[in-house]
Image 1 (tube, rainbow, N blue to C red):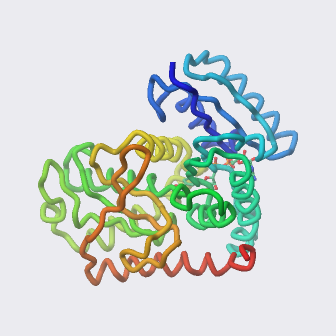
Image 2: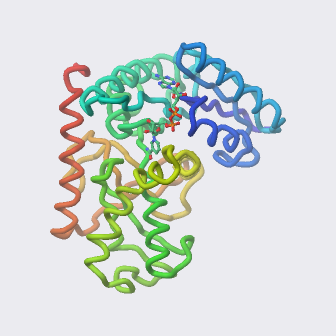
Length: 328
Ligand code: NAI
């Protein structure tokens, strides 16, 4: 039997947590032969801790053969102890009348503390995925707060946007979603993101050539992917949860087990390529293998793409400036 992998999940009693934990414990994220230990963090308030206890009881009741242990806690240093994978899902939601700036700062406090706790107690090669919004900037803050851990191990979730774009593209081009390759979502996980299908193919055929409609790209595809989260809230009365959990599983599974040559989108600290300043956590195309991601390099950037990539970068720079004073 393989050594269990320790997976920390924050916000474990929330909506996404509820859609995520059972799939991790059943082996969908790390493989059907890989035991896991779940280390679950919730807020130190009675209601959250009681809800977490309930989720853990249900996990127990599933009798998952791969679930080798469970810890529930309100202490980040307990949750992150020796963690191999950390899914940072819990975040402060935007309250009534709350300014975007205040939201950013409230979350900055959470992710500074969690980055420091990871730095202190997690595995030295912990792989971190930030889901809680604003995901890119929260990942940046956690990365900056964990100077002893590899910066490249801090990532933000753009995979839901990537998956949303795949489905929209499949519908438009009338191809099977599983046949699509080489799609990208550049930038911030926010409506400014840029889904870029210029290189996308299905069974080797260019989808840009097949669709050949600049108006659809600019006025339907890009805004529809960008505003999909709002459309889900409008329809469901609640934000995306199962699809977000699914994307988190896709992100970590591909990172650890490999994407088999496929491009996937991950929010990762920039290396300066594509005109994105170093360190900014920005959605880029990567190929993953052996627990590492490699950027797809050298893609052409046309004028339309440059403008779209700069717009989402400007938003990230603004967020970064808003928290700079907290990071020293
Ligand atoms: P939720 O409100 O149902 O659950 C969040 C949970 O986190 C709550 O149980 C709360 O008690 C807990 N929590 C809050 N602060 C915490 C902290 N400091 N430490 C530990 N736990 C904490 O929210 P939901 O629907 O599960 O969403 C979670 C986050 O994911 C939100 O920020 C949401 O905006 C974001 N999200 C990101 C997506 C992406 O594509 N990157 C997609 C969908 C949601």
